[in-house]
Amino acid sequence: MKDYLENINKAFESRVRLGIMSVLMVDDKVDFNTLKDTLQLTDGNLASHLRALEEAEYLRVEKQFVGRKPNTTYYATDAGREAFNNHLDALEQLILSNRKDS
Amino acid sequence: MKDYLENINKAFESRVRLGIMSVLMVDDKVDFNTLKDTLQLTDGNLASHLRALEEAEYLRVEKQFVGRKPNTTYYATDAGREAFNNHLDALEQLILSNRKDS
Image (cartoon, rainbow over the protein chains, first blue to last red):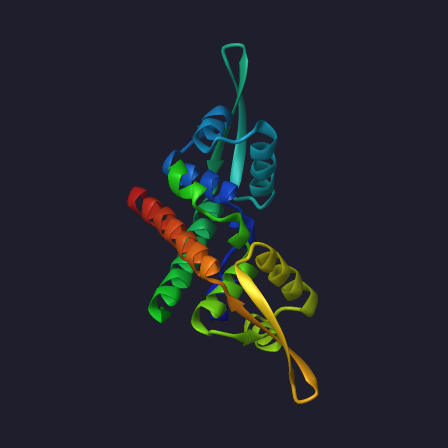
């Protein structure tokens, strides 16, 4: 019982972060507004979760100009992809163990 | 993408609460020390998560005396069982959608 709980990664506990990582696992690079629209979040809420994932080195930020407009894109690091996959594995174990017992 | 994220229940986001509910889904009644040992938590940490789940009406507390010693047990409410199963369903959808895309 304890084992798979230990593999549940605190960095991915909130559903916003689950959502961000899910998007970044599929698309190589995603800009702020696309994330915001996809996940239907406020700027501040999205930004604070992005910052936490960046500090954990699970994603990286790229700032560029598109014409004259600044454009910020995000992509998952290899460490982020691996950690997220491990997290999903742990959740899968949790689900299996609950379904088995019921 | 958004749909299953909306079904992820904030009350169960932390792994401590996932652990508490997993235990209560299996055993009808669990006392504080059993939960503490099973999940390897401090008293304060466990107590604060139990309180949050009680406030959400996902579990109930029963206080009794065993001999002269007070004994506090916890059990999941029907609402708690249903909500936790819905949460696990949402996590399952999240996993399936990530596995499918990769």
